[in-house]
Image (tube, rainbow, N blue to C red; front, side):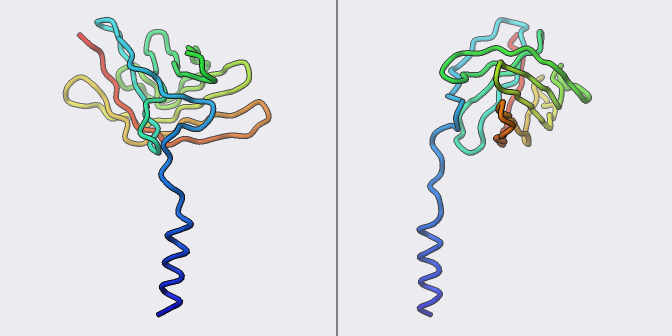
Length: 142
């Protein structure tokens, strides 16, 4: 009985608190204003619940706040059958990082789309990588 209580106490004290901050290099992307007819797919970090990126459709871009600066990166490669003009796999590159977005995009009934499963992989110049689970929504204001 005592061992069970000690194990429960150890598990309770070793569980990390839920993250409230985004991992480096990201900070939360502020609300974006889209022009009528402009489509975007927004991604949220599943761990923190914060908006981390916006994928633009035309041209295909990734917008994020990286190292404290708003950054728009053009797509270097896109793969898979597009949904609403967004590819399930997209790759982007900055001067010292590469970004790969992998999404399962499901069309929604109201002219939008939902990303229930996805990841954003950030690979540093030294080869180290961070994989963030993401969720998202796509839409086009009329």
